Image 1 (cartoon, rainbow, N blue to C red):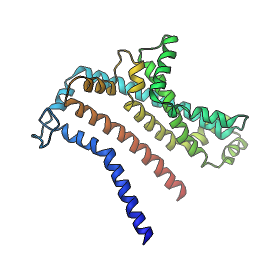
Image 2 (tube, helix red, strand yellow; image 1 turned 30 degrees about the vertical axis):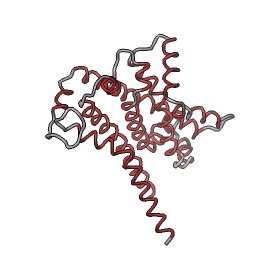
Image 3 (cartoon, rainbow, N blue to C red; image 1 turned 90 degrees about the vertical axis):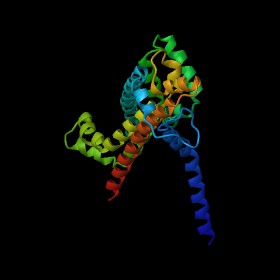
Image 4 (tube, rainbow, N blue to C red; image 1 turned 90 degrees about the horizontal axis):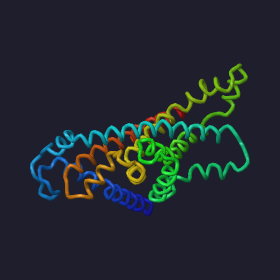
Amino acid sequence: MTGRWLNIALAVYVGLIFTFVFAPIIFSLIFSFNSQRFPTIPLGEFSTEWYVKIFNDPDVWTAVRNSLIVSSSTAVLATVLGFCTAYTDFRYNFRFKGPYLALILLPPTIPLIIMALAMLAWLSRIGMSGQLWSIILAHSVMTAPFAMAIIRLRLHQMDPDLEAAAWNLGGNEWQAMRHVIVPFCAPAIVSALCLTAAVSFDEFAVAWFVSGLNKTVPIVILEIVQGNIDPTVNAIGTFVFLTSMSLVILAQLLFISRQIKSHS
């Protein structure tokens, strides 16, 4: 009986957490189709006016283009860095390996404002601040540990003798990498690409510091909410949320489905 009540309490607690997290997002989605300018209840008529407004706004399209360039470039660069780091951990044993991995996993634990200031100071010193490449480099530093963690988890499910078997069959290290390691890690690599793209697409604090005049979608949202109450922010926010969640869900489905297949 005690276990049953504990399960019920846990279910209620999880339900409250999900409600607290997703309720504002759901209301933002609802108000994005509201004809009234102010987010009040009762709602007005169903309208797509705010979506038409952002669709016809050239600044929004420029921000979307910048966000797509930044997120796709970040995903590729961060995943390459994450794969190389994960393979180094899998393949080699060396002194200070623990501190090496701890240092690599450090960026996500640093407060964003500190990371943003550090990136701004460093990129300004080398003359690369205020460009799209500035955001890509900063986001790659932030998201590479996520890619590394995903690919590292996949590599540790692999039999280490498979690579040695490829060498014994006449393949060199690059051939073993191409025909054994990369195919085995392919689901994790795709998951890392999706996850890092989602994180980069949704991030605004670091991007706001280093972007200069190159605005991404989250920066446009920030500028809108700093002015007056504009219901177009609900429409833009809905677009950002659906894009990010689609990438995250796709990454999870790919990774979980591969794990299920490997255990079946």
